[in-house]
Image 1 (cartoon, one colour):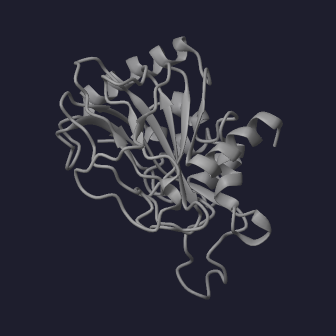
Image 2 (cartoon, helix red, strand yellow):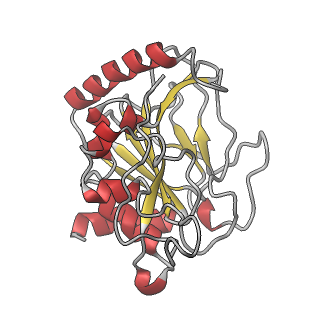
Length: 265
């Protein structure tokens, strides 16, 4: 881990978040934004339980090849791995991608402050959220609001309460925000009609259940494009054995190729 990565890891440990400016180019952001709208318009009527307070797409790895490199992006993966390994044996453990999505909150929408780990006061991170700012995040368009250092609180935020030390994290498009998911956080109210796309890659310790089963929703043609670490992050080493006669460990020594050939609707 280099000096810059250590700096961001220290900020994440201390405050519950770290902001890396200029992680990707504006040109890349614009490309992702154009792809997002094509995908969203194609699938919006087929998404189950779509949230009326935001537009979103999930499972980015199976939607377009541009997203594959973000699974283990060099700007964040060492920091995420180190953060999620804290508290494990020798501070070194496996991690997985539990969810990927792009979200665009609706005007008038503000998220309730929440803790994504669902456990308060834990001593080391269980989940790290990585939010790539595809648009600027600011006070008007639903930028992420947080209560700094709340990842250390042994309680949950109260519903509909505004805390004195809340702040809205502002950043230019191309920046990336790392959050300890135990920290109280949520989107601030969006008061203008401008887009505010956030591309979220959520990572966890390997034994935590993912939001979607990537081992079932990864087409063979996508699987073949993944490097070995991307396959591992998507959970292909952590498919539980059928029984004790199949394998003696909950982890496999190698990635297990998907048996089905998943196809998008």
